[in-house]
Amino acid sequence: MEKLRIVHTNDLHSHFEQFPKIKRYLHQAQNDKSVDQTFTFDAGDFMDRSHPLSDATEGQANIKLMNEFNYDAITIGNNEGISNSHAVLEKLFDHANFPVVLANLREEDESMPKWCTPYKIFETKKKTRIAVVGLTAAYPMTYGPNHWHVKLISDTLDKLLPKIKGQYDMLIIVSHIGLRVDRYIAHHYPEVDLIVGGHSHDYLAKGEKVNNTWITQTGKWGQHIGDISVELNDEHQVLSIKPNTVTTADLPSLDSDQKQIVNWHQKGEQMLKARKIAYLPGKFDHDKMAAIQVSLDAISEFAGTDVAVLNSGLFLKPFHQGVLTEADLQAALPHPMHVVQTKLLGSDVWRMVMEMEKNRHFLSKFALKGMSFRGKIFGDLVYKGIQVDHASRTVYINGKEIDPEKEYTLALLDHYVLIPFFPTISIMGKNKFLFPDYLRTVIGNYLKKKYPINKEKEK
Image (cartoon, rainbow, N blue to C red; front, side, top):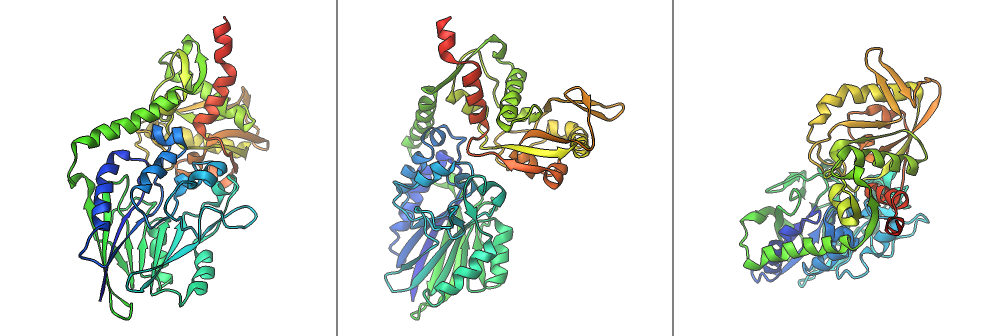
């Protein structure tokens, strides 16, 4: 008889306020003498650039802290793979002391990235072979422009699993693909014993069994930690898998925890404050609309158009007069979003605008979650170059009535393509996701050029 313990995390999203408790719990599990061995996994989205320290260090602070968690393997989530540029992801794990398992991502030349491996086979002290395969959410629409080739889940498993057949006694998938796709795997790949999941932020307190496969997931933000008991017989066959979770808030605190949490935040802020961007004139002082309007100019220039749309809920804080730093921009716009250039026929632009106007009142106070949004409510839609006559339902582009047969280019955001309120964009738009810059860097670069600090100092 062999007893194993598997502790796991997912979707930490740089919620460093949970890290001291998580670290202590993982260390206690890793030193549990009542079992033969403990394994520790993370299922992705461990970093989120909405935290100033993650943003300032491009995720290196996350790696340094995670090194102390003693992970046996992790996979990446979309926040690592899409919110970071290709260059940042290439060096993200340079100082990691844990392997990254990831079977469905390739470089543009189809080679494996140097920082990951499709799977890893562990041999326990009692000679049980455990194969751990990593998978991340397959989003070609956004991985492609970031110079990665992401592979479909079924295609990946159909090619990989036959290759490793016979090399393992227990098969675990560490996945950042969401509960729906995890269930698909459980239905179609019965050789999988356990899925340590993430991405969809589902909290499975005692796991979920689909056919013979157990699926686990701990919700989000480190609010829970997964803890699984596994028993195998002397022939290395799995006898039982019993998933459980613990609530992080219920774990004991130390007096030093809060000081450490505050220090991490302050250190990130200090680093970002040292990076000056622009010197803004008085019209920006605590005027959110001024911030939105200049941001519309920024994204429209970036996308090569003079028509753009943003929503006010993106701006958590207005800009201010004087020196604007990366800390100011990060606090105002913490969202890891990308600008999208979309091309639509005039008839489809009209339909898109009608969708926006129809949903305007509802969205003004709608609490949007996910889709890289880090605000509280969607807010009001603000246009550049679009005017609407509600009485006649006429749409104008830069003062001219829209031509239904003409193609127009607009600057939008990636989450407008993904949320369900403006379906015309995703159905009819020729959508180009613009990488590597994300929303606040696009705006910061524009402000740096339009309101340079040096020229202000010379006055």
